[in-house]
Image (cartoon, rainbow, N blue to C red):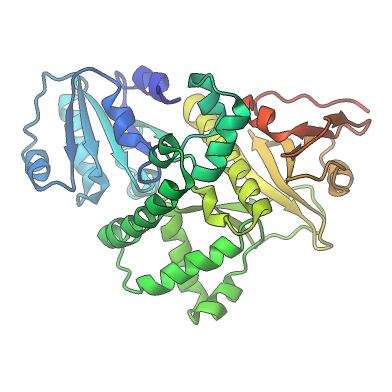
Length: 383
């Protein structure tokens, strides 16, 4: 399997330091090792590799040097900047990590102008259809049951996935979190994750979470940000521009592993679609430099659309996700008054017939749409 970022990373390596970040076990190390036949690989978690990094004694005849988990080194940005400024390229330099390296690079901004960054996501249907000859419906079902993380997906059984998931989250909380943050109350953070699983697809009140966990709001916000930095969850905020009486504060939270919402079929499907949209938008930003955003729409009266896609500050797609209901949600008519040039699509998993309406609203089968998704294509039917 050749991951979707490989060619783009190879284009940038001769010119800049490349940072590749993403969730634990989403395939970063495998991708890095697949770029060239020969390379040197160093993981800061390994004692022997740590000594080599401190001595800067890697083989400079190798075309590529891979630094994994380098952000766990104190003042790693200054260290990497010194190597780049003193020695330049070659060898090419690739840095990978299970935490949001962009949050670390912003502090002091000492790597400004010296790097390009990529966000590697787990597998989604669009990527899977590129290298598999299986029917997209079969691929989707495996994705739906086993997640998009390569190891459980390739094993292909729900039982293996469930066993893998327990270990995966445990490593994040008991290794990555402790290595990077001063957090002692792991049990309460585990409870927070359980509460978020029940709220996938719903707006989340910080004060309600604080009350449920008997913590103050600032602590809850800090923990949520940590879980975002570690690629456990991500937030989708309400879109407010040009929408009268919209809610401005409460975000939704989704999991990079959509199966955390396994107790609610609708929420699980919505999470899966959210992951595909976020992955596509990150790819557009990382490779083209466009400004992108993923939001949801909601008014105080309860009218809501699951997702709004924005590219270069221009809303392009309104997307509603349904398991079976084919009749378009009435909320489209409301929001199209404020965003008339936005493509309105209702994605339905189990559908008999696709439809379009004079208003421009489309009802599409979910699987084919995800398999060929192109958010840069913005076609709005005129009334």
